[in-house]
Length: 79
Image 1 (cartoon, rainbow, N blue to C red):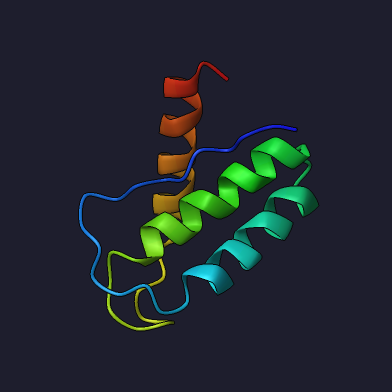
Image 2: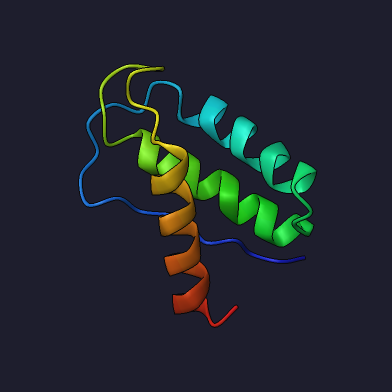
């Protein structure tokens, strides 16, 4: 069992769609060759970034935001 830490944004505006965002980020990671732990972290990052904005779709982060944050998280975790 591996614990994947939640990605915590600086501010939470709207949690609508956060689970859906995770459910998009996780398979995205798997389909792009990530192992299960990295894919779960990708899902966590997408969900964490999503809650910064209002609305299920309009609050979604860009691909660049996701990968920048994902890489920063992995660097801080020593991955």
